[in-house]
Amino acid sequence: MQSDLKRVLYGEAEIAARLDQLAAQITADYSGKELTVLAILNGSLIFMADLLRRIPLPLQLDCLRVKSYYGGTISTGRVQFDPAALPLVHGRHVLLLDDILDSGNTLAAIIEAIRLEGKPLSLKSCVLLRKTKKRSLSIGADYVGFDIADEFVVGYGLDYQERYRNLPLIGVLKT
Ligand code: IMP
Ligand code: MG
Image 1 (cartoon, rainbow, N blue to C red):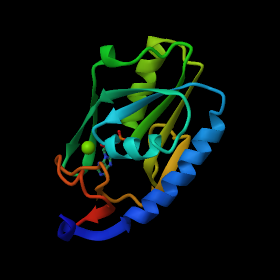
Image 2: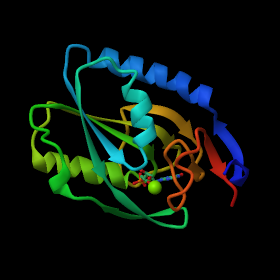
Image 3: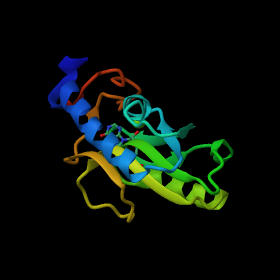
Image 4: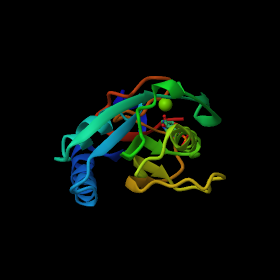
């Protein structure tokens, strides 16, 4: 798999070190509160497992399976999930976890669905990666692991046509 990469962006040690910082920040920010974490699958699966084990707070974990459709490596903007599968958010501190903020379509759609479902006490989002680009949607993330260039990346949960999720590092695919 690694021979399909043009370049490694972040190796295992770098990811682990950044997760330590991110988890410390989240733990401090939510100290004394109880979190509801909503992980967006499949992409955030590995990030979620490694991040949450570094956060010693009482929390509830829910997962939402979301499909974003791609024409090759470009987002088509179509996002699909089952709104009935959303957790109860009313009166909760909700933290969304996703692998990457690209166009922002996925987070925007989920945030809108959550707002229809109930009134959370707070609603923030955390992404492992954020692409540096102009987004037509004014959607941001409250916690970001790494800012990266606008290139298609795989590994550490991120896929290309469902492959490479199990690579322990993050890299740019050969085109
Ligand atoms: P957005 O809705 O365009 O922000 O993209 C969100 C989803 O698209 C992510 O959760 C990923 O599953 C996928 N995605 C966006 N960019 C990449 C990438 O560079 N590599 C792999 N998946 C990506
Ligand atoms: Mg994907």
